[in-house]
Amino acid sequence: MKLHANSLTRAYGTLQALDGLTLEVDAGVLVLIGPSGGGKSTFLRLCGGLDQATSGSLQINGTWLGEDPASLLAWRRRNGFLFQQFNLFPHLTALRNITLPLEKVHGKSPAAAEDMARRCLERFGLQAHADKLPAQLSGGQQQRAGLARAIAPGPEILLLDEPTSALDPEMTAEVLELIQELAAAGQHIILSTHEMGFARAVADRVALIAGGKILESGVPGEVFGRPQAAFTQRFLAKVMRFA
Image 1 (cartoon, helix red, strand yellow):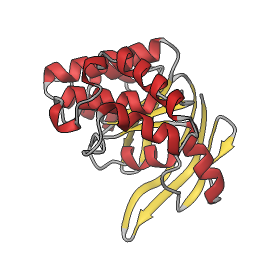
Image 2: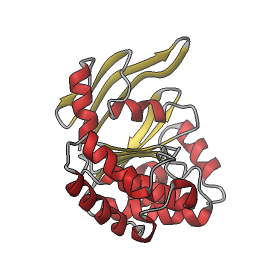
Image 3: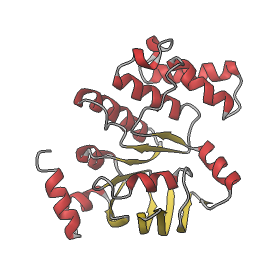
Image 4: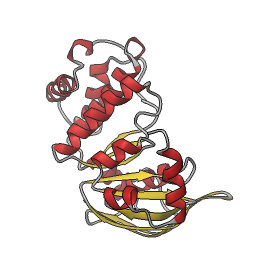
């Protein structure tokens, strides 16, 4: 996965969510860390084509993510998303939550969509829960169902925004193990997390975002073991104190 972000800004009224963010990455798994409100979620949305920069440029795998709606739609269809809220359709079963976008977004036949969905449910240990509504699933099961939905069409890149923020420690470990398995299998991933141990274990590259800027980036051993920026040193000393 090759990513080039140059002087990205994103303003929402008077709020400057990104402020000249620049980053160049050639890696399979990019992990974004940093304080809440620093710009991680905004950058993820730009990477997924779900939002547009106010200024600057962003290119991923040779695709420029600009203002053309058709190009952004095509880019979104190539990738998978899982954000802090599970966003499962509450009135649909786990199986139908996966088959519906396969049919409506990716043009699969009902039979092909069901086959793909059932294989994903089995992969994530949910085959026995295929006919359950989201309210009948635990938080970890809901998040696994959301992950199965994101993976089902075979995304070029999987974008994950704090995928374990709403889960208890046991469910967090369960979902992180699944993500690590996907990364080990070669899935390209951009994710944000507050789980520093996981970030260090799964990332090929780590980028710390604060104040809408990249303050430090590099391989995990450098960022976590020998941070150069004073902000990174303070941030990691705080968040890893009890890790």
